[in-house]
Length: 316
Image (spheres, rainbow, N blue to C red):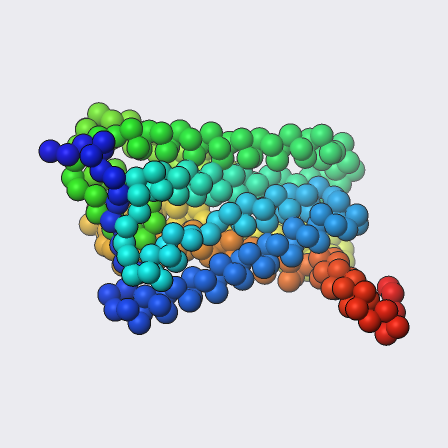
C-alpha cells in the first residue's frame, strides 16, 4: 500500500463537470478576488497614508485588510482555467499552511477589534491607557504569531500522517478533513483530531468573549441619549458581529458535522462561505459604511487628478 512518501500530488474536486461552467466559475472567483484585493488594498492605503486614521480602531482594521489580501485561492482559479485537478504535495501543504495562517490571524484580529470597541464605548475614560500604541502593537503581534503557530502545528501534524487511501480530495482546495480521510494511521489520525478539537474550543472561547463584549456594548449603547450616537454604534458593531458569526458557524459546521451530512456539493458551499466571502465583505462593512474612510479615499483620489489637472483642482 502506498504511503505519504509515494504521493507526489493530490487530485482536487473540480468546480464543475463541463468546460463552460468551469470557465464561469473561474471568472466568478476572479471577480470576487479582484474585488477583495481592491477593497482591502484601498483600506490599507487609506489607513497607512492618512494621519487622521492612525488610531487603534483603524490600526486593527489595517491588520484585518492585510490578512484579507492573502485570503485568495489562486490555485483553485488556475485549476478551473486550465481544466486540471492536480496540486502537488508541497503545493497542497503550502496552501493549507497559508490558509490556516490567514484565517486564524484574522479571527484573532476580529476578537481584538471587539475588545477595542468594548473599551471605546464602555470605558471611554480608560481608552487611551488600555489601548495605547504599545498595547495595540503587542495585540497585533500576538494575533499574527498565534495564526502562524496554529497553522504550523496543524500543517506539520496533518502532513506527517501516512497516507494510503489514494490521493483524491473531495474539495476544491486543500483542507484538513479531506486529507485526514486518506490517512491509514489510527493513532496519528486521533492526534490530529484532538488538535482540531482544541483549536475549535479556542475559537468557540473567543466567540463567547466577542458575544459578551457586544452584550456590554449594546447595554451601553442603549443608555446613550443621542439617537445618532446609537445608530453609529449599532452600524459599526452589528456588521462586525455578522461577519464573526458567519466565520465561526461555517468553520464549526465544516469540522464538526457528522459524516451523514457530508457531500461534495455541501462541503464546497461551506468552504466557499468561510474562505471567500469574509475577505470580500469586510471592505464593504468596514469601508463603505465608514464616513471617515470614505472621506479619506475621496481625498486620496483627488491627488492624482490635481497632478494631472492643476488648474482645475481646488484643494481641500
